[in-house]
Length: 275
Ligand code: NDP
Image (cartoon, rainbow, N blue to C red; front, side):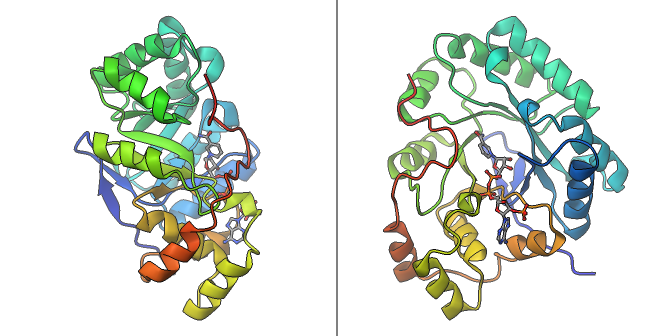
């Protein structure tokens, strides 16, 4: 059987993260999630991105345990939901996520959104969780430059990751530079624009010229900008297609063409002006 080989990149913790993972947002809890994660692991994925709010942590954990692949080969991310901010609530929410996943530790625990007023206190709790060893890395999501600068001014632990919406249609250059300069690995969520721009003529023409699909062109673009990508699909063929992005390269000219597509696209919530 065809098995993907996905490279791992180094985080500021010294640990590694597979450069491509499976996102499981909007995969219904229960069998659908268990099957998707099981297939992903079968075809070679070693990185799963879930969150408390997705409602499918139990199934992610069950599929990982059922896969027969050693736990330490699979990178598991989950996230702190917005109503769980603050010191005690964060500690409690993390315990509950671990309990649902039935894991002793996660590889990455993210603050899902920069909730105003409480996020500073939350980050202190995240640091305590990291020190306990039960989250091998901690990080943030949807943090724009002001949120990150505020955090960095007061943090003992620099986030390992910032997960944000990123695609040629939402190209966050300044934020990327700040992440890079601070040793924070940026991760692209909705890297396929939730499917909304897969028919764009520029993507199609670059893909046709290279013998690649629009989805592969999008993922390759994010990877070449240095981002980890976490495309979501429930279909085996698409998991394979999305994973076959490490054996070709977009030219500087094609990268520039794609860079020019920025339209500030937000396919879901948009933290751009969040207080
Ligand atoms: P994606 O950009 O990954 O797009 C997913 C959609 O594209 C699905 O409809 C899927 O359909 C389709 N698709 C997948 N592969 C292909 C392909 N090769 N060709 C054509 N269509 C394809 O959207 P998401 O918003 O799900 O983002 C990915 C992950 O990012 C999430 O699952 C989640 O883990 C994370 N995320 C994090 C957020 C945050 O705030 N931190 C917010 C949003 C997402 P099908 O399943 O039918 O194949």
